[in-house]
Image (cartoon, rainbow, N blue to C red):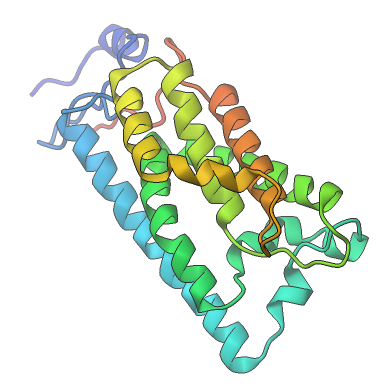
Length: 233
C-alpha cells in the first residue's frame, strides 16, 4: 500500500472523528466509538491493565500485614497534620486489611477499565486530579484523630468522572456507560453523606467532586489530537 501524502495526514489529523490508522492489518476506527475494532481493542487492553493493578495493591497489603511494616500510620492521610499530608498521594495504595481491599477491587477494575479505555493520558491526568481533590479534601475536613487509607476516593472519582463525561461529551457510548455504572454502583452515592460508620465519607464526597472536575477539564474536543496517536508501519 502506498504511503499517504502529507496533505492526507493533515486531513486525517483534523477530522472530527479521530481515526486509529494502521497499515499492517491492525485495528481500525475510532477507539471511542462503540462497535469498532479499535474500541474493543482499547477496552480489552484497559481491562488487562486494571487487572494488573490489583495484585500490586495486594502485594503492598501483604507486606504491611505479614511484615508488620506499619504502612497505614506512616503513609496514610492524617487530617490537619503536616506529617500526614504526604498521605494524599500514598493512601490510595493502602488498605485497612484484606477485607477492605477485597471490597474495593471489583469496582476499581470495572470503573477503571472504562476510564482507561478512553485514553492513557486522560486516565493518568484524571486520576491525579481525583487523588489530589479527594486527599486534600480529607486532609482539610477530616478528624485529626483518624488515619485515612484506601482507594475508595479514587473509585468514587471514577464514578463521578463517568457520570459527568456522559453529559459533557454527549456520545451514545458514554451514555451507555452512565446507565451501566448507575445500575451497578449508583446506590453507593449515599457514601458521600456523613455517617457514624468508620468510613471516610469526606474521601468519597471529594473523590466524586474530583471526578466531575476531571471530566470537564479533560473532555474530548473536536479538532484536538486523539489520545491514541496515528501509527505507521
